Structures are given as structure tokens and as C-alpha cells.
Image (cartoon, rainbow over all chains, first blue to last red; front, side, top):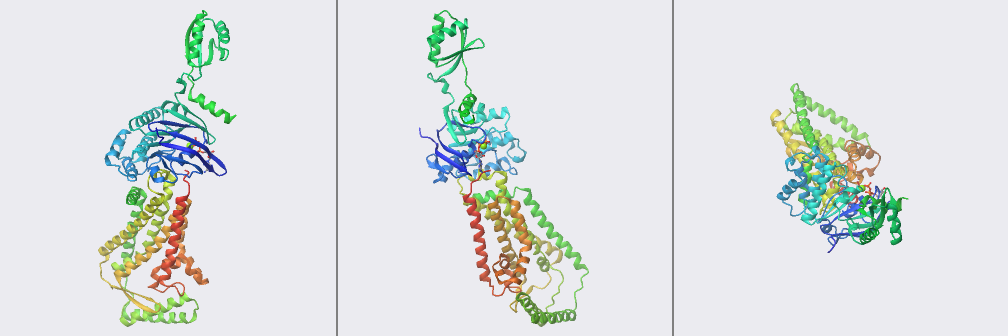
Length: 305
Length: 316
Ligand SMILES: Nc1ncnc2c1ncn2[C@@H]1O[C@H](COP(=O)(O)OP(=O)(O)OP(=O)(O)O)[C@@H](O)[C@H]1O
Ligand SMILES: [Mg+2]
């Protein structure tokens, strides 16, 4: 499949410092792509380049195969975005805000405005000025604004900033729906790991302008992937000794009455069979779910030190 | 696309409270001058024919003396022109005094053109800077419209708004005055340039005054627009431009006393009326010269505004 958004060795110099340093990544249609990084890592700067707000120092960004630098108009027409806060005109009503942005794109009809207002559940306040909206309502209107011209790529910078848990959940459901039903690729930056984990298919971690890691959120389900397991056994000391002798390559230790091992799925199965054959009962085996947070810290601690 | 952008800007302008405050102030200004002049003229006695003729003759003597003594071009030409007008009045028995009527009142309202100039400066300064302040500039620029189109639409709406205010002022003062004072009165207006007397139809003269006033407005609007686009700050743009609006002409007058270079100053050229009334500020200036100078200034302002707007990164 052709990627819809492609960053190719992108650099951005701000002052003397490289705020973005050689970032390359590809996002595919219908995919939700997380862009993680601590404060000041260069997320917003990257997003400003993708949307053409700032110029690229070197490298290229292509959207639907059009370069944002040399073919701005055909590239940008496929993009919908909220950069940082949902900035809308406070003195215009919800409907007029959408009308304003609808006029800036081709082929957006009155019906599109109506249906978007309904989708983000704002049709009951369509004639109210945005000044009176809560942050959650503004965020929803921001999303409606970003999707009004049916873009192929939706770019969101920290879209859940300041939302309460219910608001975050709602946003998540809505984004997932858009990605699935309309095939929109969503590129979403955040430093809130828990959120990204719940909606992203893939994610990249950026630190000090450099990509440190790109992964699938569900990588740990692959059979060859090494994960942490905990076993509850009838005789901990005996089990430990047997395991170390039989599987010398694995990292095995005791902790709080559990046997901890780091192994692939297959190896854990073999270990359990071996232990039971040696008369050790295995009550349960639990895979420690490594959170995105663990991976995030793992990936970034090299840089922090 | 461009027309839709203009439509958008107009919609935004007319959904803001400040725009209606401006229109309200303008209406209040028109009413205030109407009431003021109405009470002033109630106990007004027009001088008799002998009185005003004697007055003009003695004025002429003072002017003739001034003309002989001064070596300042501006004062001299003013004295010559005023004498020409006075002689013309004496010959044709046209009193310089008249009861208040729709025309004299509309004359006095031309002061409100300067007020309109201020309002247009405020709009010109805020129409770009506000988008940066609110952060909406980001949403405006990440659409298929080019930056040039976005900025051009904003400048067009600023000028349209100025035109709208001028037409409103003209219509409002005409209506108020026709009701309060009636149409009686002289239908001609007399001016002089280079000692030549020009007799105007009153309505045409008013039209020219409004048009000439709007040249200053156009130039300062372009200036405020440029400053606010370059600095992305409306307060600076408003402060500098309004100061120039009120003090620019005076400063240029002072400069004109010192050097001929004053003729290249913006304000020596904005008042195109000078070529029909009183003659130019500096010797040797012509209407064509002024038009060229104005066009050069306008181009410089716009090139700066568009250049900065197109080139610079948006990082808010
Ligand atoms: N105009 C500027 N001039 C110089 N340096 C800048 C400028 N803007 C940002 N930076 C620097 O560039 C780096 C990246 O900033 P950026 O805003 O992209 O980070 P971010 O990942 O979005 O952070 P956050 O999570 O806080 O939003 C920061 O170190 C910042 O200090
Ligand atoms: Mg940021």
C-alpha cells in the first residue's frame, strides 16, 4: 500500500539548534499513528512543517505523493488539522465557523456542514457563539472543522490537552470511527502515553528531534517477541533451580513468591511442560503487559541519563 | 476562491461588536455636529452687504502686505489665492456668509473623514494581527488558499470597509442635515489656485473633498496594514498610524519651511485637494508628481506586507 503521508529525512533548524533532526516515517490510509515525545522533543515543530506553517530546512514531506514544499496546494488539500489548541473565531457561531472554513475548500456543501455538526453532537448549539463553548465543545468543533473538506490525512497536535476522561474517551471513539469508516489516516502527537496506546496502530517516539523508535502497539503479541512472564508454582526454589539448569540462556529470578522470566511465548510453554514433568505444579502463568510507558521510558532513557 | 475569502473577511468583520461600536460613534458624531450647529445658528446675524465688503477689503490690504514681506513660498501663495477669492466675491457680489444649510453642514462634517481614517486604521491594523493573537491564522493558512490570496482578501476588505464608512457618513449627514436645515443656500463654492479663481458646483466640490480625504485614509490604511503584518501586533500599528494621521500634515508643514525635500514626504502629497485650493505645499509640485509619489509609497507598503507575510514561519 502507498503511504499517504511520508516524511523523508526532515530537518528543522531553529536558531542554532536542530529542533527536528532527520525524521523519516510513513503513515498509511486508515491508520492511526502516534507521535510520542517529552516536552520540547520537536513534535509541534514537525507538525508545523507537515502543515506548511514553517519551512523545512532540509528533507521533504509528501502528502498523497505531492511535496509540501514544491506542490503546496495539491498537498495541503488532503490535510485537516488542529495545531495545539482548537483555535476558532470566538465571536462567530459554531455554524459560521464551519461555513468560514467550508468556503476555503472546493465542493463543501451545506449538508456537509450539517452532518459534521451532528457527528460531533453540536447541532443543538449551532447558533451559539463559540465564546460560550466549553473546551470539550471547542475540541469537537475543531475536529469538525478539520474534517469539513473530507481530508485524507488528519493531523492532530495533543488533541486531548485539557479534556476530562469522558472527553478523552469520546474523542478517541470519534477518531477511531473516522479512521475506520472514512479511511482517514490520523497522525496524532501526544506526551500522554496511555491515550495513544488505546487508539494507535503504530507509534514513533521522538526525542531531542530524533526518532528513537518506531513500533506496532501490538508488537508484543508476535510469537518471537521476548516478554516478561510470571509463574506461580508449588515449589519456588526447586522450580528456579530446574529452570536455570534447563534454560541457561533465559533471564530468570525469584521475586515476591513468583518466578519471573523473560522469554518468548514458545519457550514459556516448554518451561511449563518441563516443570510439571519434574513434579512442580504450575498454578498460573501471567504475561506482564509492558505498557507504552515502559517502552517510552526504555527508549528515551538513553537520551536522558 | 478570492471572492469567498473576501466574503469570509466581511462576515468576520460584521460579526464583531467593535464594528458596531464604530458605526455608532460615527452616527453620534453626525448627530452632535447637527445639534451643535443648529443651536449656534439660532442667534446668528448675517452681516450686511457693506459690512462684509468692508471686511474683505481690509483683509485684502493685510494680505497684500503679507505677500510683499514674506519670503516663504507657502505663505505667499496662500495670500495671493485668498486675495483672488476676495476680489472675485466683491466683483460678483457673493457674500462669504450664509445661513446654515445642508451644504455648509456637510462641509463641517468633513472633519469626520479624519475620524473615519482612524477607524479604518484600527481595522487595517487588527485584521491580520488578530488572527495571530487568536491563533486562527494557522487554520487560515493550512487550506488551499495561498498566503498572497489570504492577505489580499484582508486588504480588500479593509478598503471596502473604508468605502462603506465614507458612503455611510455622506448618506447620514445628508439626511440629517436636509431634515434639520433644508437645502437653501448658495450652490457654488469658490477656491483659488495659483491666483486663478475656480468656481465649483457645491455637490461636486463635496465629492472631491470626500475623495481627497480618502486618499489619506487609503495611504494610512496601507501603512497600518503593513506594520501590523510585519510586527504581527496591532497596538504598535494603531499607535504609529493614528499619530501620523493627526500630526503628519503638521510635521510636513514644518519640514516644508526648512527644505524642499519635504515634497517627497507622504503627507505633502496625500492632500490632493491642495491643487484646487490654495496651491501645493512646496513650489513646483504638480498633481502628476503627487500621484506618482503616492503610488510609490503604496507599492512599498504592500511589497513589505506581502513579502513578510509570505516568507516568515508561523510559530504560535
Ligand atoms: N521559535 C523558536 N526558536 C528557537 N527554538 C525554538 C522555537 N520554537 C521552539 N523551539 C525549540 O524547539 C524544540 C522543539 O519544540 P516543540 O514545540 O516542537 O516541542 P514539542 O515536542 O511540541 O513539545 P511540547 O510537548 O511541550 O508541546 C524545543 O526545544 C524548543 O525550545
Ligand atoms: Mg507541542
